[in-house]
Image 1 (cartoon, helix red, strand yellow):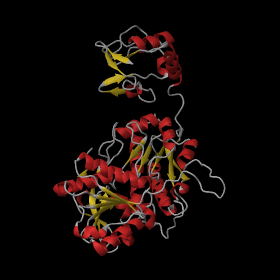
Image 2 (tube, one colour):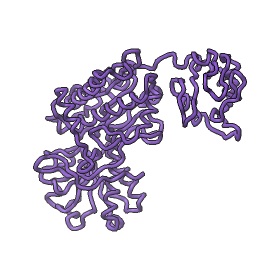
Image 3 (tube, rainbow, N blue to C red):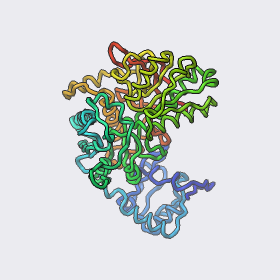
Image 4 (cartoon, helix red, strand yellow):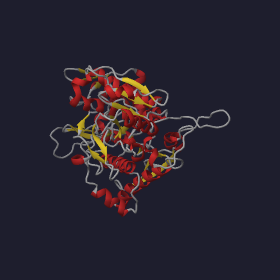
Length: 502
């Protein structure tokens, strides 16, 4: 607990954390126009003379244990001068005093993992083999190219960026599922979430790629490919290692102090956006008829359905009807004469194909809304007029120009591939580089996290502007309805941009 003089306004230690003003490395800052001094051992252990031109005499002898504790608890410097009112006076028991002094003795002396005099090492957990290997390899190539551009310009404060990629293919291999091409798998990232490796004998748990990267001592992670929360998130949080993630389809760590920063909203958030969109055009109908939620089960499907239920309840609409494929049956015959306001689908491409073919045969007027990860031409077929996709990356007037990205790809000899994954990797890498640059030469995981939180309206070149905050871990909060153009097989805007309301 701390108190601000002279009124002794009470502050929790978390709110009045030393690093908020003195910086994660303890080297001081200018906070709100106030000069915050360096509190590293080298600064505190030496005397300070009065600087020429200073209005106030801030000369002092070197701090001792006793005078340092007095400064922290009573607000008086080593010279006896009263410290500024913005410096809290902390209440510490004996154990806390000893722990704090031991910490201050080594503050700033040991660099964070991944930081050396010449390099900053960053990790990426991507599938490099298996079904999704082509996607992971394309993402890794884009991040490496972004880092190569930075290094060619002298690096970040004379440090070169180094990327380490660990193969996370096992995490993305659903049991008993095969696919003929990588494009069809772009919608499968939200499905099963195996945490064990299948063997003919007893199951064995293996560390995921994020854990292996942390074991190798990376500063941060970028552009990893994943579906939702992982056991390794606990370690990410414990170590304070930030992860700039293009997209986690089924959600992720959402605590305000989470180290995971998402560029785009996850699929449950897009489900809420779908309800909000329908509320703008069919509110009266939604009070008389329930929406239909169709999914293919598992945690991803349940998260989608729960998000729809929560949003309809919040708006006092009728509770949605939930159907699960392939076990459930679709009452499309009834929908022909009594169509629902819309069907909100999330699941496998096969499930979407089943739904669309049934509607084509029996209820052609029913509208379907689904995540853009399922905008696969082979799946949609002739149903392009009845299905809209929820797309968070910007189309039409919100679409980025991509001029710089196209030039970047050409400069590095990278062929266009799975564009959504290449865009995501590029945007995530650009965000990380910007935050590292703003952090300065004294880079730590904590200072990097602070700079990510301070990012406002950052233009990645391939997405809408990205904004994070202390209480905001999703950089782009909104999306559009998109249609699949049957001529070009590209998504085109079917609505204006819709902000995602809390």
